[in-house]
Length: 300
Image (cartoon, rainbow, N blue to C red; front, side):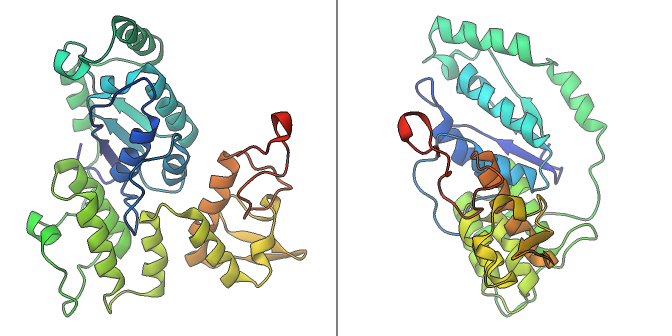
């Protein structure tokens, strides 16, 4: 499965308690290749919103979760909903007989998990799964670098590796990241180091730098910067003024065509706000909705 560029392989660490979303959110972003451009916060967020945005606007179409049973039914249900929203195929690798991994689960937890799998999943044995993946087209050209490439400092005096026929330079790099993380050739920390070394390389173009933001977890800063470059008043637009794919923004009644390099950051900002509950008349830059929630409190 690590041979496919559109696949992310998530290896969740052993987790405690019934609510594992905080740990899962960070691990899922790492698997997708959104490792961050700076060291991310130590504890993830108790939602999969950022993960969903990256799946919507990224190339990952298959998410494989190894040892999925350790997550429990409630967390898997959240992950399943995210996969449905983002049109991502979710593959859950489970072993209900692995007592070492499931030792912290109560009988009720195991029963809930078994019921969830029976009511939600189509199950296949290992031979069937390998046969299904064996029939998939692996594509050509995007060959990841050797292990030594990740651990050695990038030589800024040598040209960057050329892209394959199907990807841009940064798309290739992020495809290598996903495959390297799946196969254990690299780590999120090594990847962040390489992303920052790329940023300092003289071969990097403006287009490359904007594509590099695909590895960032910050939608707000990059989206607002892109809006500011588009028009001095664009940072104050409402949700309804921005096309879902970021291709157009209506500013002061004028519909502006967004340059290709700025579309993805703007689209990711808009999608993150939409998933958070923003309405059409609310600002795309808002951190909170204008509509009061229960007891007069604003909804996040």
